[in-house]
Structure formats: structure tokens, C-alpha cells
Image (cartoon, rainbow, N blue to C red):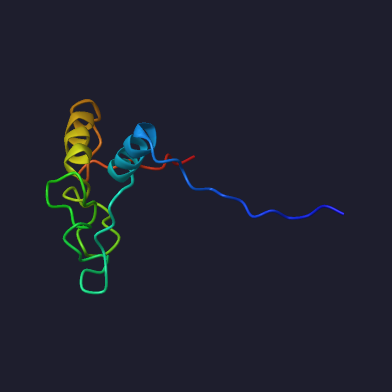
Length: 97
């Protein structure tokens, strides 16, 4: 019968391991949400405040809302509207038979 040996998953203390630990600390994202700063639809990081983080406005489903989205979304939306002739005033329509 096979015997179970405990696994040693520790890393050796050398330059490569210390470099890997430093890089791992930089690569893992930092979650700054906690009980006093809970993530919600009205959290500043969730709101579209012309930065790269937020997308929503804290309101309803953000339909027909051209301020929703991060800064990249808003710039792309403006670029697309240059070539797309449809808008809120001139919406897509369903053809009738």
C-alpha cells in the first residue's frame, strides 16, 4: 500500500524566488473595497466620472444615456456617431410589410 508523504510547496530562498515575489505583488490587482468602502452602483469607482474606471451613472439601466461609460467608451461613441446617421432623434425603425 502506498504511503502518503507531506508535500513541501515552499520556494527556495534565492534571487529568482525573491524576484518572483516582487513581480507577483505588482501583478495581482489590489482590491480596495471593504466594509467602509463597499462597491455599489453609487460608489465613485463605479460611476462614469470621465475616468477609466466607472461605467454607470447610478441611475436606472442607463439606456439612451450618453454620459454612461468610461472615457474610452465616450470617445468611441463620438467617433461612431460621425459615421452613423442614427441617433435618439432619428432612431432605427422596424420596416413594415
